[in-house]
Image (tube, rainbow, N blue to C red):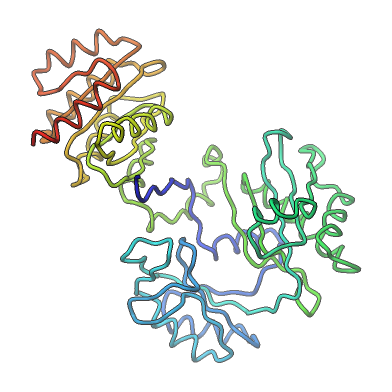
Length: 405
């Protein structure tokens, strides 16, 4: 079994950034400030003038509440009524590593904290807007059972899941928003208030080119206010060209540096814990390559997908990334050239081997467009490249190359 596969999220936003986007669209969220120092956190706590304050360490990983700091502080989320305590706690959070069940062993350094007004929640509901292939557009999904895992609600009490298909030309109609609010359990004047929040969330969904806006919980306070307490926003990475301000907020500090570097060149890289680097075009072929390496007793060191419109420079960059991983003891190139021209790959491989002075065994299997020319380029390069006839042969040769070392 492979350990630690962390899928690439195309855009990583911190909690306070998602809240700011909602606030900018008129969605009701808790009053909050962001601080980078303990003194800023103290000032923010005083400015809130709240009965109770919640201090939250800002990292992307989940499980913050039960996390532990290397300063000795336990918990990345704290409630207090005293602003002075906020300053003290922030001093034990900022600049220290927080370890949760979702972070690496060494944890993640906290550079920012969110100081927010703590509100009581009398009712918790679930609400989301997402793109649904079967409806060819956006759909609202809601449940009066909020604050819990929605998949569990769908499995145990499917009658408590309500859906409304949104017409992309009309948007969310008043009757739809009110019906959803009623289904969520909001009554009297709160029904209209919740419907208004639903319409504003749809405005946000459109404005930022989201593929999903999930609010869990969408809650009611004892004072009779409908508030979006926690939200997860997924974005369409194809819209980056017109959402520059949103994508500029991308927080890559917690991503694998190799994954971040690969993304700059339109390469999809996921680090694994083995020692055979995989250099493949197409996600399906990459997964099959990982499986066959495993079948023959090897362990893949990564999943690197070149994609379709590959250029010679990308091949060079890919090799540079693969050889930067000290765990890599062999490289397996498995290219099936449909859209991809194998000769471009071959030229890129030859250039990378020479310029990077490759020190590990290299096994290459090429098939498809211009493959004969590609094989000629590699055979005439004079480089120590092992050719393979098919994927099975390539995997066996890569595993054997490491065994010989």
